[in-house]
Length: 384
Image 1 (tube, helix red, strand yellow):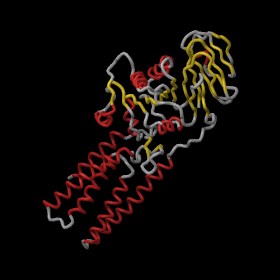
Image 2 (image 1 turned 45 degrees about the vertical axis):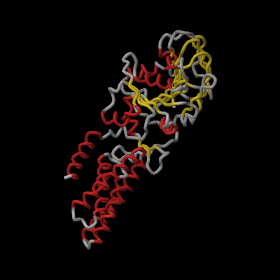
Image 3 (image 1 turned 180 degrees about the vertical axis):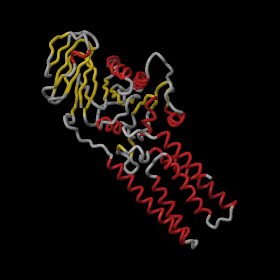
Image 4 (image 1 turned 90 degrees about the vertical axis):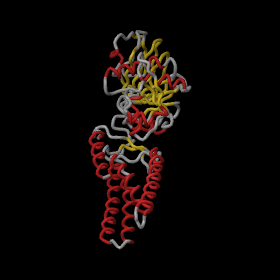
């Protein structure tokens, strides 16, 4: 009866939660906990933070089943039967949620069963479970190969700048194309989940300082990360996700601002003053434009930058020098009509008043740096 119900539940979960092929999950490998990979959406590997929870459940199941078999049945080997039963229940749960390590559970369970049936002189059944164990070995190897084949390359694509350090305004420094080393925290917004290697490297490097908008919590957990805090009014959290982050959820019901700003204010309350924002673009265009424009407000309170899957946005004022590379695509968006000067770009400007957003866009760096001068506020975009 249990296995029949588990199969129905598993079919429902696979059908309901199957991710699209264009948006594969990013799952932390159990065998290499400091490494993240892009995994086939059908066959993710096991998030490390679930190990202790499942271990505790396994122990409880084993004790309960062993007690029932020892006291209520005439099983000659109640404790071994309890072991295989508990392993099978955990294995079914892992299979239901597409975790590749379920194959390892079946390998152990079927090997124990094969030995048990051989001891009981049930040789055909023993051989059958031995075959199951061999199948589990090949199954895990297959899923592991799929993970290796779909792992992203960290090499720059054609036309990209090599790893760069974009600098502006004294101590402000953000690295383009490799890990950022001098920020205090990451804010993950509810737009498109990061897929560029640079953004994924930063999620991994600052995995203990991720502040998550509530709409991004599910994707972050699926990627194998656990946030420092989840901030928002909670309307975007499913019951399952809410339960998973309930001890980290910071409820802010204010309807006069968005969740990104709520997360930013929470970061300030934690004395974070160098902040990188990920996942703030994509999906609805009005959200994207609003989130980018907020950088002009955030710069009054912290050193902040926004990284997308295509480049970085950095707010600036005064005289700011940005590290770049020849040919890098540059756009500057003016938040007011203060005169703008651009130097070191293919199309320079000198004290030009910009009245439309497009007028200082689609430029190109000539060397390893360029200069932006304004008495107002601008947002500078540097493409990868």
